[in-house]
Length: 156
Image (cartoon, rainbow, N blue to C red; front, side):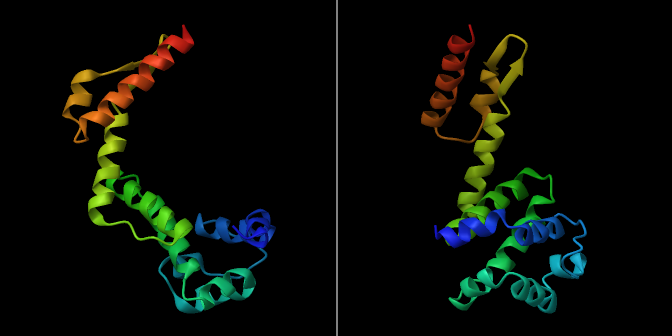
């Protein structure tokens, strides 16, 4: 990644924008968060003027602000399927690749499988019945079991 873009991630202007995406107010920028999160073009333009580094990305044909707004909206949901969509949006935002609905469902199944991992004062264990019901390949189930066993040995 471009060093200037990396520096932008720590910049207070970018943090201000992220605060707005989280629904908080930022005194550095007068943006209507509700309109912005609804995709209002005028509000997006304010962000692009505020963060010209991202406007350079947009000029190459990639609406990064639009993608980040989409990500913020997806992350507001606690529904697992929306969470997996958020992961897909995050990947496409970071790497410029679209994630298909089928891939989103696969990610959701993997997240559901990890619910079968139990954490308690004795360490980590697997609810095997839960894991068997998970709609994931057997190889992945075996990997989850192996990681759990390694964790048990490590914590013993």
